[in-house]
Length: 147
Image (cartoon, rainbow, N blue to C red; front, side, top):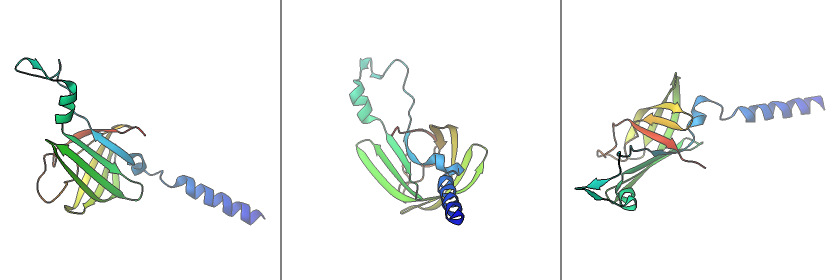
């Protein structure tokens, strides 16, 4: 009987430790943040409605899933693009996570993710395809999407 209880406790302890690594706080969907211009948006003195401004803004999100799957979606100028790939935690360097990301169309690359706080990161997103997109190589700020 004691062996059974001990085995159960060991299994429960192992389960509780799963996902406790430094990369576990990356799990979730992250939306690109854009700086809002001061005083609103206007062209030649005419105020542009916020709904129109929101529709014109580029949007980018990255989703890191528990099983090592990542998804990237971008919307810009009426066009959209999606990409899927895999990610793997390589190492941590202070507040930066180093990942190996392999996108279906873009190949393997190193991705560095710096945590500003638990709900904000800075990173250069992985490419959406073989050709250059408007976001590749730029370090951008992302906010965690609330559940």
